[in-house]
Image 1 (cartoon, rainbow, N blue to C red):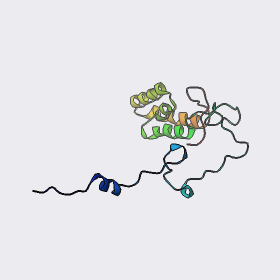
Image 2: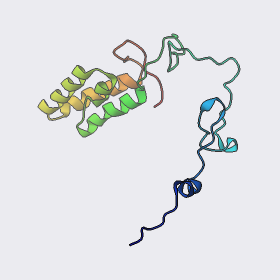
Image 3: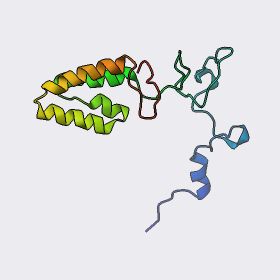
Image 4: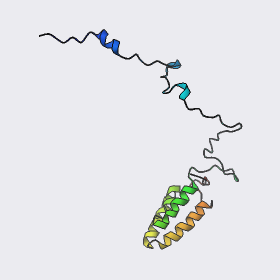
Length: 141
């Protein structure tokens, strides 16, 4: 009985692909050629990043803005029209108040909670509510 001939180790390694080329500094090459790399525009002249206000500052008072959006919070609070009162307050971090609104909604069959939710949504959208750290809510999403 004869053994199958597979060739020696030299034959196997000759068919293996070459190792990937290393970029300068020992890093692997970029996944795309340089012409396909995303090009980001430079920041505008005079622009800077304020680490103490990563979401910007309030235009009138100069206070750092919250990471929470007043539009999202207001729209979530308006879900009270469909029976889910308090979700906007829970989103903002006022969990106790949000749960209180949900319980009041259940106890009053939704009538008291709908009114409370609409008034609360108007207050949130009208910049009368701040986040639990006392920062004003930012505009947009």
